[in-house]
Image (cartoon, rainbow, N blue to C red; front, side):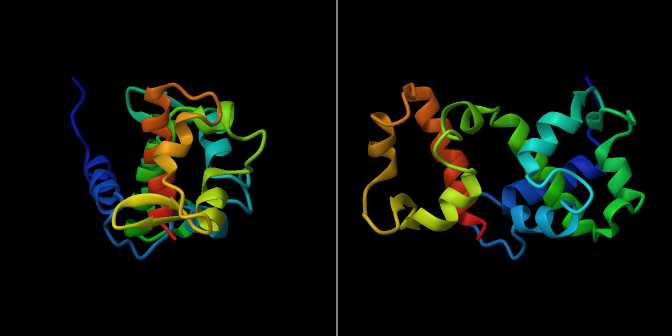
Length: 165
């Protein structure tokens, strides 16, 4: 069993702080767009799935073979330790959530982040249509041909994107 490194613990803390219902001062989507997208792919999800690999050391660059955590710790991107932890947690969440949004939703919606920012709001912990007041959990049951498991997964992805405005 691999040993948990300090960067992983820091990333897990950032993940905990980024959980829906908790305030977070840094939006990981915006952080990626402002600090990474100039040199890497414009969308963090595309970057994670196209340029990173999951290895025993965690996420690594496919071309370099170097740990993303190690690269960020070494100053890549000139991020603060907090920003690096937030991005690592964000990349891990993207990887954990799979490619469900890309497979089921991207034909109509550009990104989970854009959908959440433009059309959704968390009201008392319930994901709701910003303009329709529609309960999104109920709506997703008959939308996008999602299975019940995929509905639950998509709700978490959208809640996370909504919470990180």
